[in-house]
Amino acid sequence: MAFTSTRAAREWLILNMAGLEREEFRVLYLNNQNQLIAGETLFTGTINRTEVHPREVIKRALYHNAAAVVLAHNHPSGEVTPSKADRLITERLVQALGLVDIRVPDHLIVGGNQVFSFAEHGLL
Image (cartoon, rainbow, N blue to C red; front, side):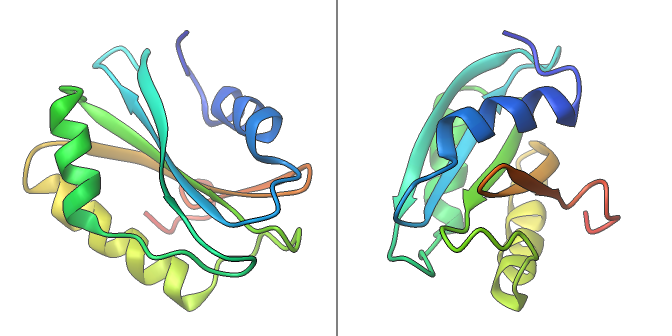
C-alpha cells in the first residue's frame, strides 16, 4: 500500500481510528516511495490524553528502517483542533527524527470522521 497523499493516509486512519474510546498514538512507517512498511499503536492513554515518548518513536522507526513516518492520534471527543501539547510533541518529534534523517510528512488528528492535518495547516 502506498500513501501518495495525505488524503490516502487520512481515509485509512478514519477507518482504523474513528470511534475509539481512548486516545491512541499511532505511527505509520514509510519507505522512500511512501509505501507503508508497517503501522502500529505505540501509546494508549485515557479519554483525553496519552503520553508520547520520542525515544520510543525513534527506536521503532529505526527498527523498521523507515525513511519517513506519519504520526497520528485520535481525539475521542471528536474535536480535531490540536492542543498546545499536540503542537509541542509534534515539534519535538520532528526535531528528534530529523537527527536520524527520518522525515515527518504529516501528523494527523482523527476525531470521528474528521481529520486535522498539521502539514495542510502549515504546522510542520
